[in-house]
Amino acid sequence: MQVENECKITEIFCVIDDFCKEFAKIESRNAVSDGKSHRNKPNRMSDAEVILIMINLSSMYGNWLFWLLVYCLPLFFPNLHVLTLAAMMFSFAELLMHLILFNVRLKACYNPGMITGVFMLPPIAIYYFARVFDASLFSWYHYVIAVAWFVFVFWLSFRSPIYWSLGKKPGYDFTEQSAFGMYH
Image (cartoon, rainbow, N blue to C red; front, top):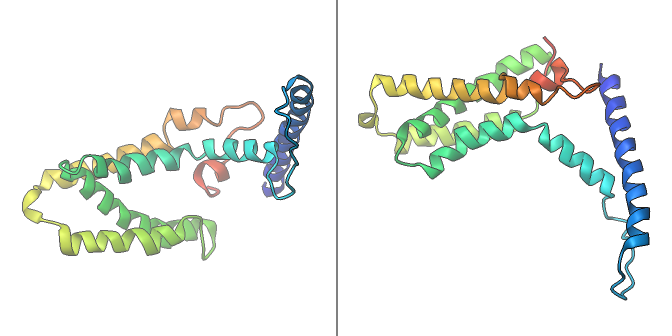
């Protein structure tokens, strides 16, 4: 399965590279010169490499959407304490997922995101609950709303029809590996 995915990435890169070469020819014929001499620096990424990176970044829809809605939204709306509570509670869920769930399913000792999920987010959440958290601001239903919020955002980011439609390009459907980060 890994080889098949690598072949598709190579194929995509080749198509992009061919397009960029043809485009460069047309551009050089039609471009207006500024009179200065320009050199192609050897340490510069090719246009095809930049485009391929942009395509891969667009496939990170779920991570970016989740990051924006769960971790950034509380920064923009600090008076909505339930959003901050949701982010801090999910930090502990990330710890469990990256320490146990993903490693067991991958049959590995490491998984992508593990460093952040173990060493960065939980310490922030621990500090929040130890130094900032004021229990008098919350009732039982705030905890329910916080959990419902991060479960909804998780579904929207990683399980919704929007997420799956991103992988509906003919010949480049999401595999279980790319969709879930692991095989089922």
